[in-house]
Length: 416
Image (cartoon, rainbow, N blue to C red; front, side, top):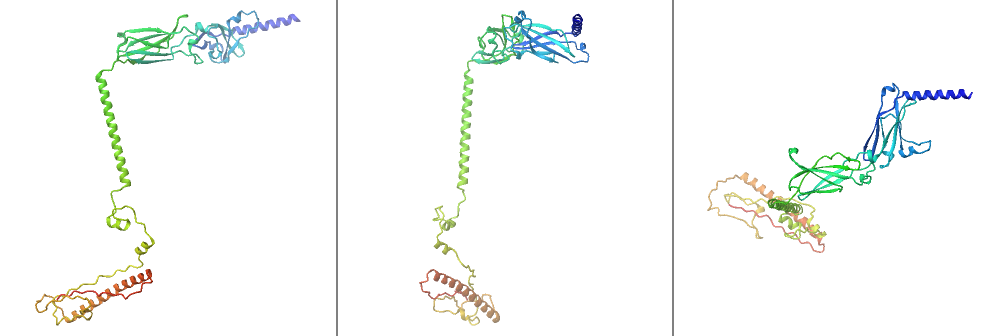
């Protein structure tokens, strides 16, 4: 019974081994490296899987563990059941000076191919990168080259792993045809290198390469960086710079003065306008004509300025009558001359001739009635004004006794 079971197990093992042998393993396994970036890549024949999807598994182990007498060996899996044809080992933190054994196999529908192994030593196999950055700074007629070290995957300098790393610098004078220019070279492990014996005021181009001689490693050259050297400044250039600075200073001062003048003029026009009040307005609004301080109104001045009623009366008419005969033109009774200061203007009727103005008796009576009416209206108007003023004076000074208002009759000039 045990023999039969043994034969069954043996046949099952042989069947699975044959099935695994039928699945083609990956081929052309290579490492793509740069500083501490490691990528394992391979190729595989897709026709061997048919319509099934194929996946790959990648593992690694330190090489010294393969010589261990222990039967069980623990491989570390980096990529498991991935459909990609590559596996990034950068995150595995492989020691730069260590030696590792890498292996990869194909998986199709539960079947596995055989493992394909590859030995890898970063110190020996990993490529070194070019400088991260190159800057050129003129130092008179010389040229300073500032070089930044290549960086690892953790952004640290590669000189931590390769202490004997150095740089090979090529520099040449820039021209239209580079074949005619002479290329010079210098090597240095320093990060700042000065290129001596250069021509002043000349364009030079620089390209830098990283090298490590122990395993004969070298990077590609950086793209050329060009810069112009400097030298002693000629006297005419100094004069031009000095003259230009003077012109700029003059323009700045001129603009400043103009701006200050414009601002002052604007403020003055705004705060002190040129249009002033007339003098006869200032007499009533200000303390004095020459002062700008407004006059403050008091209760007494307000009572004097404010009026209750304003009455407009016509100016009494002044009539002149020419050439009426004394006997034909009777003097109205209201216009007879009196001794109380009235004035009349009379001319000699006998010595004056005919002036060409004639009037009949009816028109003379009508004219006399109109003149009498006009004088009566004017007298009533002026009397009303004098009465209102008298009342106001009595209100302001009640103790003062009122006096009779003496009005002067209108004066009529009569020329004969």
